[in-house]
Length: 197
Image 1: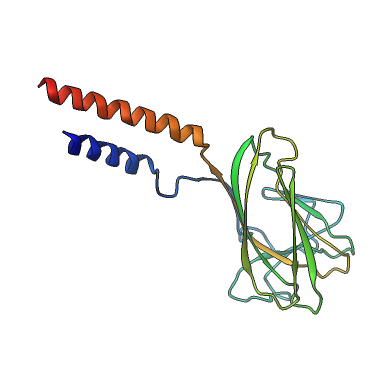
Image 2 (image 1 turned 180 degrees about the vertical axis):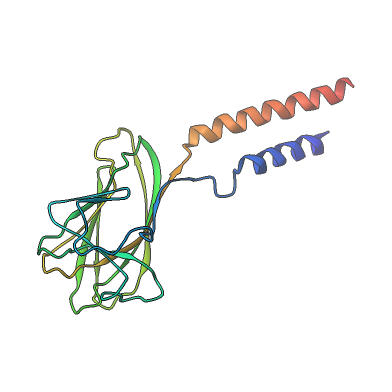
């Protein structure tokens, strides 16, 4: 009987994805669907650019990583780096943000500021730094300042490079509690039914 209840509980947990990747993708962009633009328009796809410009590169004449496809130069072509922000406004909750950053590949180091959910991080990259993935987990209770944004420091038209932006939502612990409670009730009902049969 205990074996049957344990098997039902384990099967239910696997069916709903607990213990595996249960985060849901809520925003993703690898910039491949856009035409190269120097400087980019004030908005493209799921993005807005304010206060300056960014460049969509990766095609000739600017392709520093030929096998990488398209990516963003965060210090556009008007000597004023734009604030690159998602159009999406994220609801209160817990999220994991992942993105790839590389150095400018043109002789200068750059600092990128990332903002999300009222929190901010800075990443300084040497010019020769290749793409590497960065990740942050963010929780916030209200949807204030919840667009994800990236901005390069400086203003010399040579910025750090951005690619593969991914935002996933993470279920809250209370959700797991409710699921486990329901599963325990189901296992108990199965055990009682088996005893009565």
